[in-house]
Length: 293
Ligand code: SF4
Image 1 (cartoon, rainbow, N blue to C red):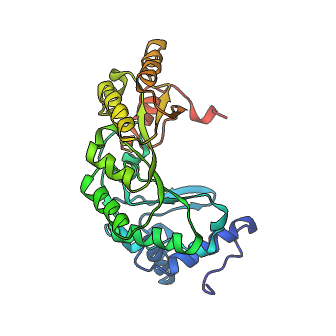
Image 2: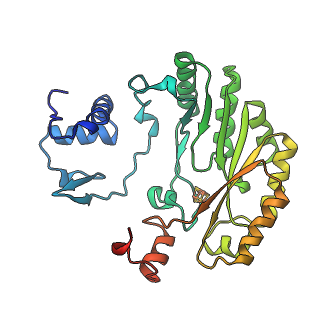
Image 3: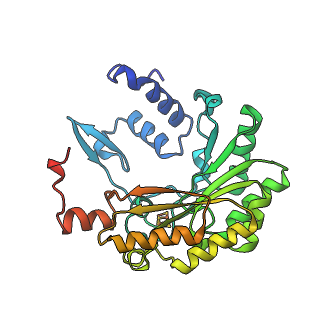
């Protein structure tokens, strides 16, 4: 730590900065570790790949397409520096990225449709560590699409079973990536609910933004999930370009047909790097960002 001065960092940011430094110094193989090594070697920030930084108050992005392949190498977060006992739910990541191409989704912009997996053993070790250290908690698999590769999901869940880890957990996934046998395994290993990203009940809007699910598949999967006995929720987005009261009604009808256990309704926010952003801000010039408050 003594090679790094924190004095120029505002006091309120120093705690998180110390955490970051301790984290990256312990992981020289990670991008954070590479950053520390580069700084130690006297490189200037502009020469370091894959970072963003402020220069004279202006944000600079050194973009890179290079993604670390072996994400097990990141290791566990430094949990002991966090107020772990005050959290009711712990988030766990078993993979990064999503192979789908939904035009409004930040995942495609950030991970370029590349999926990188943690090994199931590494994920289960982390869960076991958290259980042993902090006691029973609900675990949320915050992967973009938890069930997208069945072999990976099954291996992970089977390992939980094998180690007799009786956890309560939930996940986010897509309706076109589950099958009866997988749902049964999920239920048997403690899945308490599934959140499905659905967005709209209007097939034309879904197709326009490359969400490759049909209304029929959504209803069927919802009924299948009910029949297996797992509660589930739907996430929806209102305000797609082209949304009308008719398309809103399609979504309303879909929600009614599915009889889900709950849902989240969101207003569309175009995210930088997505096709939606390009469409709304660059092609259509619907908004002038400089004038927005
Ligand atoms: S399936 Fe979900 S995570 Fe994957 S691209 Fe579509 S919205 Fe994003």
